[in-house]
Structures are given as C-alpha cells and as structure tokens.
Image 1 (cartoon, rainbow, N blue to C red):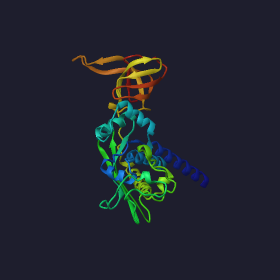
Image 2: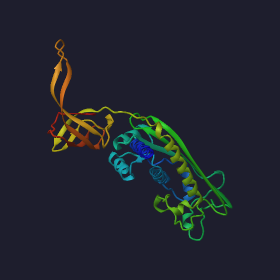
Image 3: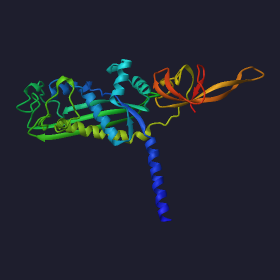
Image 4: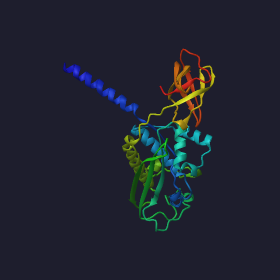
Length: 324
C-alpha cells in the first residue's frame, strides 16, 4: 500500500511538472536601447559599441537557463526584422514591438533601455580613445583611477503582442568596485572591442569590473522577469477563416497574426454542406458542416498563413478553418 501511494505521488508530481512545462510562455527579446548612455559607452571603450545587442543576447541566455520561458532564437528574430525592414527607432514603439511579436508567434515581447553604464561618478573627467593604448596596460583614457566603480542599470518591459499593453516593467542593477584599476581592468587577456561589437558574453569581459556589473544587472533583470511570468494573460484566440489556396496538402488561409494566429497552432478544416435559414426573414441561422481534417500552421504573416493539412478528405478553396 505504501509503495502504491509513493508511486501515485511520483506520477502525480511528474504530471504536474509536465503541465507546468506546457504552460511556459513564449517570448522574444529585442535589442535594448542604449541611446541615453552612448557617451558613457564611448568613454569606456574608446569607441561606440552596440551594448544593446550584447545585453539582449546575455538576457536571452539567462532566460533560457532559468527555464521559465521559451525564448525565440536570435536568427529567427533577425530574419523577421530584416524581412519587415523595422528600424531601431521603430522597434522602440510598443505597437511595432507587438507586431513583431505577432509575426514571430510569441505570447509577449521584451524590450528595454540601458539607463546607466559606466562610472557612478559622471562628473569626473572621462576621456576616450583608449583602445590604441591597449597592450602595456588597461587604460581607458582618463577613466583609470586609483579606485574605480562600475554601475549598470537596465529596464525591461513585457509587452502583450495582441494589445501592445505593457504587462510588466522590471529593473536590473549591478555594480563592481576595485582599487588600482579602471573600468576595463581585471580581464587580463581581453583584447578589446573592434568593429563596434564587443563580446559581452565572453569570460574575459566578464572578469572586468564593468563586465561584472553587467552580469549582475542582467542576472537580476532575468530573475525579475521570471517573477512576472505568471502575470502574462492566458488568452484563448478564436480563429475563423477560409482556405484561399489548396495545393496538395499545403493550404493558404485568409487569417494571420493580426487575428492572433501563431506558428504551431492547429485548426479544424470543415466544409459547409447546408445553410439553415430563417423561414420568416430568409436570413441564415446556422451552417451544417462536415469535418474534412486539420491544419497545422507552419508560417504566418499579418493577414494570411500557410499550413500542412492532414485528414481523410480533400480540402479546397472556400473550406472553413477555425479553432477546434
């Protein structure tokens, strides 16, 4: 009896875990805006670096490792951004971010701003152009002092892809301080930041005090986003459309991301066999339909979608597709 109870409890626990895994919400992370700290970035590195992309990539890794969300890969996101030709300024807009999220088929999209990056004392003389002096020591122009403290602050927002509503806003803060070094000191073999793209995920950058501050800020930001996962709304989208093209088992339908359709969704494919009308007014009251099969969505744009049909019947243009 005891063994039966133990086995039942284990099975129940496994079932609960599987249920929790199926409830994971899918998100995408856009590159963070760093316009307000660009001067500080140039002072730290001696040249402009896209720290927005670097911190976004670090956050993706953090969220994937935490396991609270399912996260869209960078390649899929970059492909959509290129196809839709969204500029950096466009992405900062909540409505545009929501549109990107609908095309990607995610539940929410994460955007944000880097609000502080560099010294905690911005009044001290900070001169750039340090990368040319790297080799003998870790100097960043006038940044090097006897005691250096790096501070990084990031704000992130969870945006509902259906309404463009900001569901949550969280922050991450990190700082690191050492004596006898500068903001880039500590990463003994770190080779610099050429080409405008510093590898912020590298272990050598992580050993610098600015790298340590970034890591702390991203870790805190990820934890705070994890805590907001339960606040994402569970919405049931009702899809109702028709087949616009049927070539073999590949169907194109006349509804897309604007209606809430996502890649991976399953729809019923039916055919209207009879329309019941009101005998007094002549208006349609009800459609009698036969089920032809089902459609799994493989590609979505704003107003249409492509899917693979399975079933005993043969689909044709005009057949109905809807939420089962």
